[in-house]
Each structure stands twice: as structure tokens, then as C-alpha cells.
Amino acid sequence: MIGRYAFSNQGLVVGTRSLRRVAGLALALGLVLGLSGGCARPGADPVPVAVTHLASRGRPGALTVAVPGDFPTLNPAVAQDTESISAVQLLYQPLFSYGAGGKLRGLLAGGWSWNRTRTTLTVHLVAGARFADGRPVVATDVVYSLGRMLRKGAHAPEARAFAALRGYAALRAGKPAAGIVASGQQSVVFRLRHPVADFRALLALPSTSVVERRRAMVATGPAWWFQHSAGSGPYILGKAVPGQSLTLMPNVRYWRAPPPRLPVRFEIMSAPAQQLSAFDAGRVAILPAPATRTLLSARLPAGSRVLVGPDLGVAYLGFNTAKPPFSNPLLRRAVALALHKRRLLAASGGAGRVAAGLLPPGISGYDPALRPYPYDPGAARALLRSAGVQRPLTVQLLTIAAGGTQQAGMTDAVAQEIARELDAIGFRVVVRQDSWSQYYQGLRSGQANLFQAVWLADYRSPQDFFFNLLSPQTVGAGNASFYRNPGFDAALARAATTQGTAAAAAYRALNVQAYRHLPLLPEFYTSAAVLVQPWVHPADFRLFLDPPLMPRLQRVRVGGAVANSVVGGGVK
View: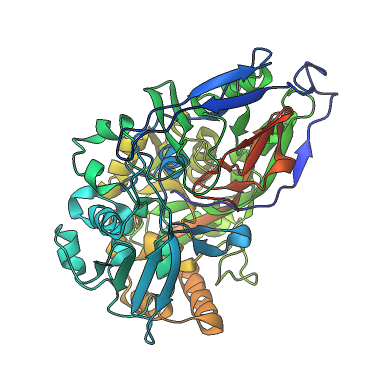
């Protein structure tokens, strides 16, 4: 579900005709935020710095961002939802990250090299990297962090992607292994059983973020991560108020660049109307909001910007292929023909495009020659008759309650549109809307016949889609379709070891095969939108949505002041 966005800083400026107020927020606020804080000894607990208001004109001394739901965890090894990763990427850093154009670059990794067979990767830590308490980041911290994520007891979904590591079974059991070892204080050696083309990209996943070993070893449970800072990122924990807000304070010891000047305050607002009202009142500076059509029709402050771009995501309808009725491919095809994809896109409120194949544009293997399944309810009914289905056929559709997400494709309106169109050809669809935790439990247990989901790329590779959603190694996790196809699995394993044009051709073939087998039905490729106040100047930073629907702020100017805010690991 969690993914990475990257798009250019092109946006729409909201005019004055549809606005309740023309002046006010359109004016520069003259807000200048400073920070103070003395030096502290290395190893001491990080202390939030004080924020000084200079001519604030009543504006809060924090960059306030609206989020639709609470933060289930701040433990980077298990963070999977948008809200949690939004905060984790401010507090913690992995070895690698992404630069302009989605290019992979080192973050805590200062250098790296492969052996001749590309089965051994040696990573040298960047000089000067420090945790928030002033202690240096060393190789044993990296080994510990990867090991705790890979342990079975951590229940980290990405752990399966590291199966090529030597001694993987031992790592899963919480034991040391040759696959990840420290070489002195500054180097880490990764040994693979076979080449993995995207291995460095795996080391950019938020779940691989490096934590301070001596602090994390004493973590007593989920609540510990809401009370302690154990990362090297530009922020440290401030105050967490469950169900209301999470405040992160600047890390005055930040090693990579001058520390950010503004605290970040996440305000939890589940209802779009509440979010827009808070934005209109100036209480929210940045509003991640995929419903672009809704934003453009809203009454917003003059000069507000709606920044829109593709996000390497796909909304899809999943089938439980392990049990009737959708173990029958004829019924899956009937559903594909019964759904009007443009209506689903319109119901989501998003600004995407109808999908043909699992891989979106921008991912190697995307095939522009593929065409969406046509809308043909007559042919869909004929397939049901040929399958001997006694109508109406009752099926359950699992989705997330509207208050639990704002991902395009998972709204009440989309679920209801799916139900309406399937009911019209002979199904009786029972829509089950659950919370995040109940939804994922339902996926793992295979309770539902159908489920509505969105996959957002964790890294820019077709492996991220195929492995997570269709691999036998992820059955019951990302592969909630319980799809098993030995031929597909063998072709995917071969593709993982290839590069260049051969890899692109292999992934195109896999994309076509998955689209014909229909373990899931791609509905539309998603786009993202972010609403920015007039007094936050996006011309001063390049906007990257990383994690989903969350701006990556390099330099944010509020009024006449400039505040450094380096999100998720560094300057782009």
C-alpha cells in the first residue's frame, strides 16, 4: 500500500472568483521562525528545541500538515501506512534514498561497490553521520537495524524481498548470518546467493532505516517509539496526542545540513470538509489531498496552489483466487467486463487515467499497447451463464472505511459503484468497510471474495509490483489474491537477475500475462495532489511526494523567512 511519489513542481494557482476571502491569506505573513538550543553531550537524550516567534501575526510556529488518520506506529521496521511513514522518514534514514528524477543515491551510504559477480555489495557509511543524541552511526547499527526488520517476529512485509541474502533463514530466526556483516566501524557487507538487480533499491525502503542499536535494544513495545528518538533524521519526537496530533521538533544535531527551523505538526483530520475548513482558516499549511476535482471546486484562499502529478500507483480490484467463486477465471473476466473504469475513476475523485496492466507509466515493463478491458455487461452476463452460475451470486467486497484513508480507489463512492455495476449483471455484492487493522486482517485471512486496494511503488521497479502483489512468497500479505502460478513465478525469478532491455522485455511479458490471468483487475493509475497555502512558497523547493501524499520539503519559505526542512533524508 505504501509507496513513493515523485513529480515536478508544476501546479495550479487558485483564483479569486470562487473564494470566500480574496485578501488575508493571500498576503505574506511575515512569519519568521528561529530556534535555540545549546550543545549537549553525545549520548544524551535529544531535547526538543524552543521555537521563537518573530512577528508571527498569530500564525503557529510550526509547519502544520493535515493527515486523514492516526499514526499506528513510529517503529520504522513495521511502518506500512501513509501516516506512519510520513513521520518515520523525518525521524530515521536508510542507507539509500532518491534524488531528482527518481535516481537512487546514497544517504547514510557514502560509497559502495559490487564484486565481479554482483553477489557481494560493500557499503561504506558516510563520514560524520550522527544520531539525534550525537553518537556516530556505525556499521553495527546497520546490521542490527536490518536484522530486527528481518526477524519473523517483527512481521515486516518487506522482509520477504531479502530472501536472496545468504543465511536468510538464520536472519529470520533472529540469528547472525553471512548475508549482513559489519566490516570495521564504517563498512557493511551484504552477500547474496544470486544477483538481485534492485538490491540497493531495497536498502532505500523506510523499513530498512537505521536505528541506534543501544537505544532500540531496550524498546519495550509499540509505545516506546512514541516516546524516544533513535534515528539520524532531521527531526526528533516532540509530543504525540493519540487521535489528535503528532509534533516533531528540529534535530539541532542534524549531521547532513543546517537543522530545520520549523517544527512539523501533523493534525489528524479524517473528514475532507474538516480539512478544507482548517486550510481555509489558515490552521493547515499543507493539505495532501488526492481528490483534485473536489479541491478545484472548493472555496479556497486566493493564491492557494494545487500541485498535481502522477504517483507510480495503481488502484485495483483484487480477487481471492484460492476459493470459489473467483477461483474460476471466467468469473474474474466477467467482472473485468462489467466494470466501467472511467466511472470508477470519477467516483474516486482522483485525477488519474484508466489502467491497462498492473504496471503504471514510469515503471519498466509498462506496455502502452495494452488496452483496458472494454465495458461490456452483456458479455459479462454471458460468461456467468457459461460458468453455470446461479444468480444472484452473493460475494463480499472488502474495503477501508472512508475515514480510514484518502487513497484514490478506496472511497465509499468507488465501492458503491463497483457493487452497483456487478449487481446489474447478476451478483449481489455485500460491501464490508473496515478499519486499517481489520482490513489487513481480512486480507491475510482471505475472508473476502473481492477487495479494493491501491499499490504505490516502494521503489521504481516492476519487481516492487509483481513480487509484492503476485509472488508465492507474499501470499497472505501483499499477495492477498492468493495467486499461485509456477510458470509466472519462474519467469519473475529470471527477470530479477536481468538488466537493461532484456529485463524490460521480460517484465512486459509478465505484465501481459498477469493482465490476462486476472488475479487482480487494474482499474486506474493514480495521481496525487497537494494543496499549499499562499504563504508557503513552493518555488523555494522541489516537491517530492515521498511517502505517499506527503510533500518532501527541501527549503520552505513562510512569508519572508526561509526554513530548511529536509524530509526523508536529504536535499534533492
